[in-house]
Length: 368
Image (cartoon, rainbow, N blue to C red; front, side):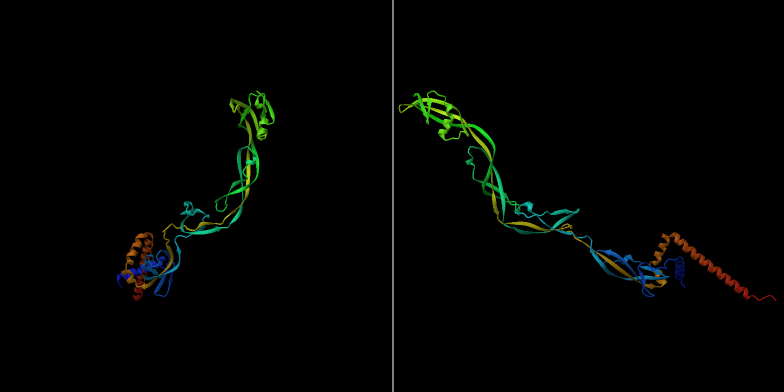
């Protein structure tokens, strides 16, 4: 027997005595006396990649050496590396699709996640024609006669759906006087005929020569057909006298104030709002950035097959080098193995010597 065979036998005995190599690795199963399999699960981006490096090239079971001969892989399941989330959103309808504000947002944040616009399509919706009530209060200041208030006034109605404004003339439904003023801008001209006469006539009222005409204010207003509640004469200023057609004439100007009011006038009624077309965007957003690639993660199971080899084959391979390296990396265990081997050799030698001694004694004849 060669020296390597002795060494291998001793190592095998030592490993068996210390308990190493007596159990099959996790996931291994024995097919028959000469073949075993080991299964391992892992994840990969590429289901066809070579994963033979995750298995030992040689291993020992129950004192027998086995060598890696091949591997089969199968896909157990697959999943995207990044979970894809999408949300659908409709923008608010707008009637100004050309407006920059009408365009959908490129990104939105929801529940702490940023979503990116992946699709947007313009949709349309038509509003129904309907009637809405409108009311407006228009203020008129310094109104002299209430009958001067316009019978019709413009009322603006805002469509609550489209936001567009519609203007229509509505009838007056009432008014309220909110203020009253006396304005000193009232005046009218007076022409006095026969100034040199003892008196002259103001309508049907005789006015003595040289009288203060401002005292006849109400007579003047009555002659002009003006309401004394709304007008008053405070003074009359006389001008130059002159002769016309042989008659002496004098011009004068009556001045005073007029009463005006501030009025709040109400106009109201119904207006028909026509149907209109609105636009909105039907959008889809994703948590993936544009052009972001989502990798697929595969859950794999690899089955490695091993075949039994002879001790000589094991020692002729790099297993011997690995064993030496293992001994260097595990000095304590190596020492235990060495002591076990040495104790076995010593016991074998002592047993051999004891047997030879007994044989010699049996071979001697008894003394005669």
